[in-house]
Length: 605
Image (cartoon, rainbow, N blue to C red):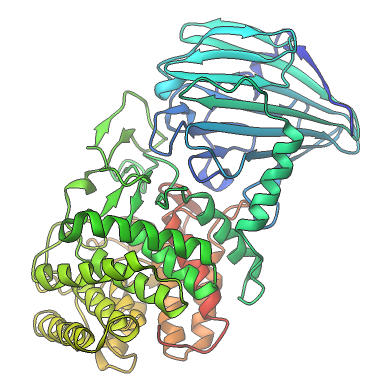
């Protein structure tokens, strides 16, 4: 095995480099994402891990510099460099690669997969390629979003550092006794220089837990081997779809965002603004029912059983527990989402910091329809469980009871009789009646779907013959394209064609799609292009048999990412930048579904 590198204390002036100083934010397109199902980290181009919450997705951050907090964990070349990187196929193992005057330097990064519920194990391996790798290393761990630094720091005779930060336990192995300790106002910081000979490797393993750590140190070689093997079992190459590499990567991202309990977070981060200084900052570190249904339906289309099973299991459990009181979102363990509150941090530039989400006070009717569509998808491929079947009946009963009510809708705005919410419920009833309901129940569900569509048509058909957003709002909306795609109304219904043509004419520009028109400003000034809508538009054209348009929209929108091929919610077309929390699960889900469905002629369901 290649020999490890050597660690030396940081020298005078080393703190002024990228690794030793503060961790300023990057544009979002430059961040890579590590995840193990229970938590996720963002890695910047300087090798700086600027975001990680432990022990769970919605816990307090130990590295919070992304939103203006203190703390980070950086491995950065000592010499001048330019940055690049890539994922190992079908995994969230990232390889940062820096080109320096001394030769290339590489660092492999991963959270040990699958993750443990209480302990994060962060693996970093520095590799000397054609020349020695000289890097600066900084560990500045601060619990509670930066409020609690490291205390009781100790290095044993084997060069393993241990300490406490808030209520967390940490252990850092492979760093060596020669790391220099800086005692700062809020805790201790470890710094050093690492030199790895040509052809050698050096492993650093950071463990963080909310309970005492096991006595035995993790073996980095075994952990790397297990992580690669577990990713290979979890994510298979999707050779039967178009854009196979991107589709497989989207599958890996969704897998990494899905916990062992079945819940999938909507995004790994909080507070990243959708628009600078616009006040649209949200915490997405929770499991939205709608988003998980999107992921499950995409997984069914692509033949990815583990993702489908997790979605079916999680959504069924929530419905069986809460029935017609189903919340729009939960923690990944099924607990209520906490109330929204501010932190005392500067926030990501252009935004402000917060945790929690006011979605916990909303009613979103379409969640019941999406759940029915999910269960129908599971039934079609033989993956529906007995709990899923019972939950489908609960969802149908909830639709029968609550469909006339006003709701917050897909975009979580003021309660109205949103057309999308009602039609998605009709679509779910139709698909569930077709795939999983016995005769009389199927007839009841189909009749209820007819009633909902007829009532909605009477209230929300625009004078131009298309669907409008609600009975009160005559505008267009990208969500309206989902109704025929999901089967609420036929593809050749005049309202389907009229809505598609009007939307493409009025709410798209330069190959990108927008949700709805906020006001009289140009589309791109009100908000970024909404990548979910771009992929839905590709599906809508595919359903119409307009394959050139379908593939054009798919290709345009799948390019709206940075080098790590991660998607945020919105895309600033003018600046070609990502906006909002990262990575956004439902965008990856719709990319995956498009890749699967555009590979063959359209099939309903």
